[in-house]
Image 1: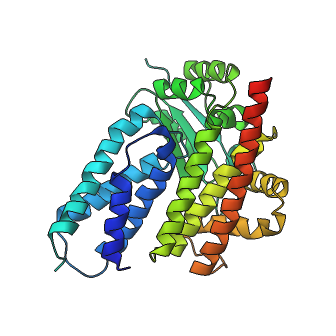
Image 2: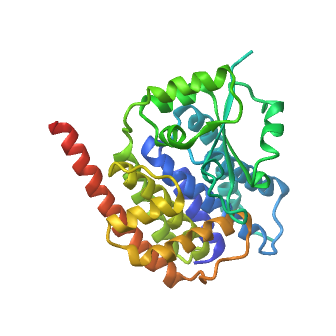
Image 3: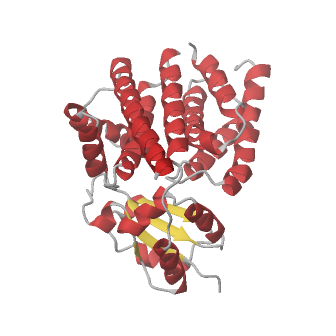
Length: 101
Length: 232
């Protein structure tokens, strides 16, 4: 599968499930996977708008926060997961509507 | 002033750290947004301070975790020690003294299974085997801590917990490679030189198989313990 197609799939896996305490653990890994694949995609030589690179960076920051060896906290997740979904959705929207130049 | 406390845990607290690979694990509990200025001075002289892994929670989060007997708090109770004695450290110590049994094992097993299914799916569509080996290693690390806890022999050290769990689940021959696998995670996180094992799809599939078997055995342990506690 092409890197861009893979990233689209990873983003769906990240933003689709409803939050539940049981999903907190796998969602952390899914977020890290999106950050990993987004970074590879950004480095593939194509030109992307700066706000997309910013969203990837913000996801990376959020991932280091949510990836700490913690337990699922309702409060922290509700607050930060909204941010994760917002930036993931921005990247998703860009991938759907733009062809990388 | 709002009470805060900072506790050392992990390999530096146990004094069995490896300067090349160990993090300096510090838990900070505070309701303030800023890190207390004094913390930098407390941490600087400690080993591995260049790899500070600071975990921050506020008091509400800590009380929430205590309500279900968080394994992380059991970890702190077993080997944590305050970097400084203050009203916050006394408050946290009192909370640890009253920590109930852990009640999240079933949920954890479900989370481990989903994380491995995700890794498997990622490998199927050509994902990054190095990343997935890191995920598998992390799942095995967390699952081995739960396995030791379920068996009544809590252990948080990487080698000790993996060693005990691999022995309990009859997969000891894979232990050395599992420990090396864990360095994929470290090398990925810190961009250290990769371990001697070459990341590959074959290696990742092999470890998915082992990890799935591990989680099945753990699930049986958790199910048995739950049944025993219901019948007691």
